[in-house]
Image 1 (cartoon, helix red, strand yellow):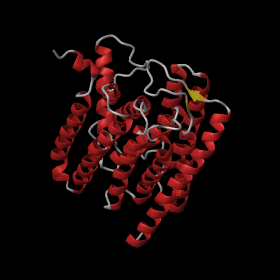
Image 2 (image 1 turned 60 degrees about the vertical axis):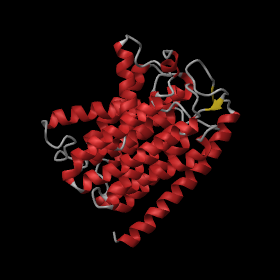
Image 3 (image 1 turned 180 degrees about the vertical axis):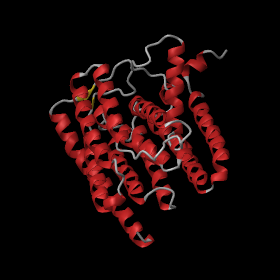
Image 4 (image 1 turned 90 degrees about the horizontal axis):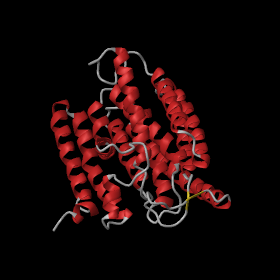
Length: 345
């Protein structure tokens, strides 16, 4: 695909998915209001008024349709596992919608997620190693499954304030698209990543603070699954440093919070308000201010991801710089932690 055609197709994909997601979210929002499918505030919530939950239906429908169209147009150049991944994402969305409506058990949710991950990895060619051949084939797939499963759940855990999931989706998708644009990743993979950017932008129109609708598990779980697949695919294509850098803030916040809760014996899977971004909101920052800070931190991570893959000799310096960027993000968020201020004289 020549540069002019790529540019035109990219603009069409971005605008079409953004407009479609925005319009379909409006339709879904009206239906959610009619049926009174609301997320009511509780002691673990970051919102103060009942808000419709389930807007992620629009995001996932648009993203799956866009990915199908891109895959069909790409023909043999499309990722071999694409069809399995999209089918698994659709099943995840259905199960997660049931969970939104009547709260399925944790074991049921985990079993379905594990099956979806296994289906996605089963389509990955045997010569594509996520960990670059550092471990045997079976070890590569087991480790990839664990990481993918963790990413699905952390993406769900991190969807706790207005605009954060959409903003993180934009950052990851844009970074992967830029890598495809400079020839590091296949163009079809980059266009699917760009479709996730468009769908997220369309949803953010309704989800920016104060949010008029939430993703719900029907949105956050399959969206985390699809973004996880894109990152796994990038790592298997050799762009493993970018696959670590692009979601680095989400990985750090969710993992550190889980380890901290586990260390003191708290139920790690129970809903809470202990993530860095949540504590910043409790400390007085608005949802929008916190999300802007995260977006500002994600911008250099995108740049570092591109640098790391364009110049292999810069990979380790880029990763080290990424650690510093994320550490600064966490420090700035924790500076507003109310618990920290209570300890001061």
